[in-house]
Image 1 (tube, rainbow, N blue to C red):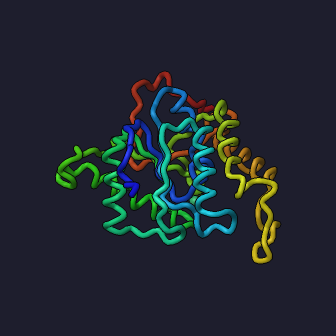
Image 2: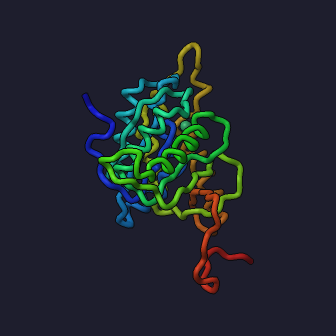
Length: 249
Ligand SMILES: [Zn+2]
């Protein structure tokens, strides 16, 4: 049987998300930029979106692997936990802590800690607690402990002022290509059913425009074309206040 702990590479950056296509909408440009910088980046999706009205879990996982190519990921996996009913259980935390302990990322990107969709803030909570557990020496005797140094939260779904914004102007097109890999979700051929008529789903063009508008908004906050917002709970250290970026006046 395929074990969740099999074949795990070490990574520099790991994004943990509730659903396939979450990272493509929230922090994909930043991941691409870090991969271009030379960091080994990975994504762990907790559910396969099996409560979604379009496509099947197997199809969404397949599409997420196509998206992984655009995101320049070294690794991507789906835990196939139940969509729309994520629970912060000991078993969930132990599994996730074991994965984090083996991947050994220095930085982890999580969903913002509050929001409309319970899976998103639940994923943030489970992952934060798993990052803590992963650092306990006695959790598992055979695998050395590892606690990520930095946890940053992708705040695009939350209506908050970000702690910082990453310039993704040069990565934006690639991020869009990653998102559009989910043809069952965003393809023009994806039609509605009687229960969910197609007018409830945004069209391909609508998605492109919406994503661009959001990225423009956050880019504007730091004076660039496209940006992705993040929040951290601790303070940011600045070494050189004479050469700080982003114009004040
Ligand atoms: Zn989601």
